[in-house]
Length: 484
Image (cartoon, rainbow, N blue to C red; front, side, top):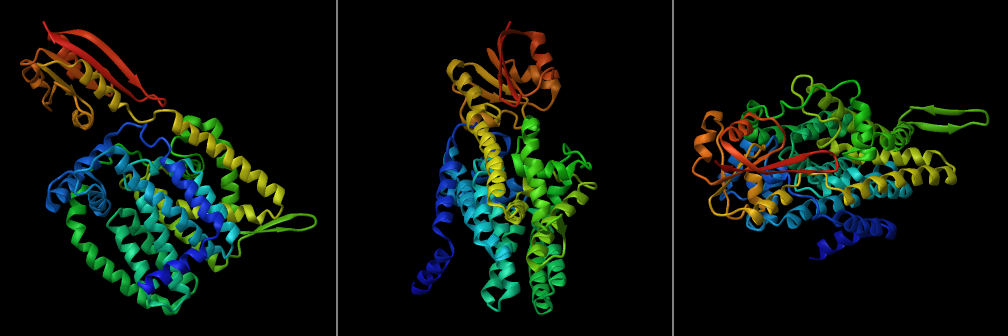
């Protein structure tokens, strides 16, 4: 107990009051209006996964519905008291927890890499006011958990590289291995670790880390059959191969958030500023009397940021030409987002002038807050909650719900459909037979002019139709038919 208490005190001493205030602020910002967005497809699959009875059933459902390993879902099942507590706010708070812990982790990582408390504070602040982090902090998916694991893997790996304490080796191995069982992108960190050990140079540490890699491979092989099963399903076929525009999209996403494509005119300002600061932060900015020189004679700290940022992004980019896995810099590249904040913070500090630093930081903060307000004020996820409420309010006995959405209408069951009964068939030839026993049919779709709707319209009378649209244009169409 004394050892634990002493260890806790040592960590607290490393965090100044300002950083503690940022951590508290992040808790407020990440929970603000967390309830307003409806559950959406991927979140419903999360609820469905953790609601399965027994470990074998959970694993089976994860393999069938996800493109990731099971660690996050198993932990979330525990958070949900075995899958029985599926309140949307409670489940999203699990992501908030790791987003808040990541603010603390970014401070520790930034201070370790840059040896500057000011840079660490700025990096933490950028994560607190990041619309990118906010979006994933309020989503019951594994984004912020993966970021948290990546931060502490890198933090302890760096500690392992420059100290002789065995605990850092085991802690970095633990976070890397947990990351591998959370998302496949963590595989890309292994080449980064090897490259860094050879570039730094850290000859004495290489042999031991190679042993760690073999241990990870040995353990991860147990999951490979499930991985192969997931790959064979090819659920990422909707993703296009990346273009040369990909690096710009990554910077824009990291700077302006997930929905930057809908705010491109505004997003260009913080994206350009952050891109320049990111480049400056990876080099040395020298102010001469007559000129400004930017050189790239790296120290180990800057090699660390460069290698651990570039290698995972570059490998994900290259793999996507064989099997698309990236989505314009959005989603799972969140694992390298902390390094982006650290490099941008270093770039800011390199400007030397307090007025210029304050100006650029104010501009970045202004646009971040603008994008965060947009997340708070508008609905981006399809309004399944509103659609379910409408059905529950007006459905009567003898009604059925027939949906052509990605979940075949099961997503509506999260909020309930009242007296109506959910039906579905994959066979277009059986639509008539499926709905014929019911007096009325609530037809739900996320796109128009589908053949299923044409079949329903051919022998049923339309009672009313309603379109529920979000701020980014995604819709749920509800059409009520009755038998002639």
